[in-house]
Amino acid sequence: MRLKDLDTELISRAFSPAKEIEDPRLFAGRREEIEAGIRALLNRGGFLTVFGLRGVGKSSIALQLRNIAEGNRELAKTLNLERLLPRREFNFIVQYYKADSFIKDARDLFYRILFGDDGNRALFSLTDSGDKRLEEFKSVADFGGEGGIPGAKLKAQTRQEKTFRQYVSSDLIQQFRQLLGTIQKDNQKRTGLLLLIDEFDRIPDKEGFASIVKACSSDYVKFGVVGIASTVTELIRDHSSIGRQIDAVHVPLMPQDELQQILNRAEFVVSKAITFDPEAAAEIAARSEGFPFFTHLLGREAMLLAFDRGSPTVTTVDIRSLSEKISQGRLRCIYEDMYHSAVKSSAQRELLLKMFAEHSEDEINTEDVYALAGEFGITNPSQLMKQLTTPDSPDAAPVLVKVRERCFRFSDPVFKTYARLREWKL
Ligand SMILES: Nc1ncnc2c1ncn2[C@@H]1O[C@H](COP(=O)(O)OP(=O)(O)OP(=O)(O)O)[C@@H](O)[C@H]1O
Ligand SMILES: [Mg+2]
Image 1: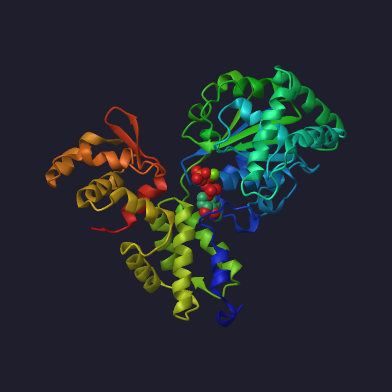
Image 2: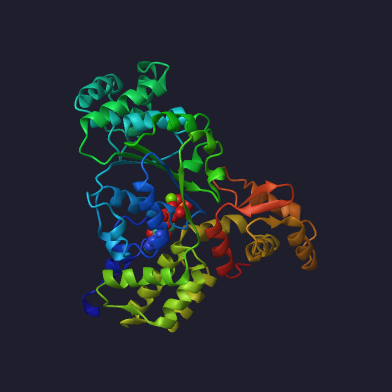
């Protein structure tokens, strides 16, 4: 494509700072993790876990594993992992759930699995007679119809779940196992049923989950959970009671060469009408500090700047004006808003936030920071901390969370990097 045929819409589509990667052609790097994932899929009856820091690319990896489990070989081919795939192709039935604020405990989760949601069919519908049974419930749940009202779908869903609560016997596990058995019987040509649960860390009460997994996993039924954690134990505390082999896919920060590949994937989307010169690409990767989110954000903005100048190449000139844009807080993203609500109009709080952000450790000792703050004339740091740990506006998330006495960590490590990249507001 020539530069004159390019438009800003296509540039925006080449990057996805706010969305997981579904298309294998846009997925960069992560060979080891995908390899470990494929091995996990081959391990009959095993329990799959995908975990790492916030924003490192866990969901994108899980979605690629879903593709692979469904029989798509494209990514394995690109990563030269095709020899690992079974000759009789994978053709799992995959259900991919995202825990949300409606799921408070294991019970809620299993109702969601039974019932499905926007992205998943109800498990009943996977059986030959299932749709009929589901329809029975639906007619009860839809009674009094709320069609057309925004949010009604969600309400109907919670109501379905409520109705269902009365419907199933108290022995949920027994019911669930029976259903899984029927699914297997009715889908014998499939490799198995893979139930993936993303954002698993968000479920407040996970009690009982492990025993359900233990009772319901089989050579046919595989469970997998994805979430923010640095170890399997942090993700699922009672994992030893799962009684199955746990396949752990740990997702580390993304290495620089893989971050640069994200830029290559984007060049491919715009048919190379604009490309990154090596120095500019290296600069973006370095500034991203292992977080692919930043590579998407900075890559997009830099390409838009090159487009503005009518240049087919992103160069360090663009990176320089991008840095200015960031330092002046003119780069629109959620982290800019977070920065403002954290700092408000206090220069001292900004200084304190910067000190936390500059700290190299993940868990930050307040004594170190307070001592440094003292040298800069901040006399009452703990007072300033309040806005960072317990913000006054109810929908603002805390920037720092307490790990233990005198020790804090950024609730979002991507914001930590952003707060460091961004120059002073006050
Ligand atoms: N392998 C990859 N190739 C290209 N882009 C990626 C890759 N992995 C992640 N990204 C990008 O990085 C960002 C974060 O990815 P993703 O949402 O998968 O991370 P996550 O670990 O699931 O985040 P969270 O902890 O918030 O759930 C997204 O913009 C996504 O498009
Ligand atoms: Mg995710």
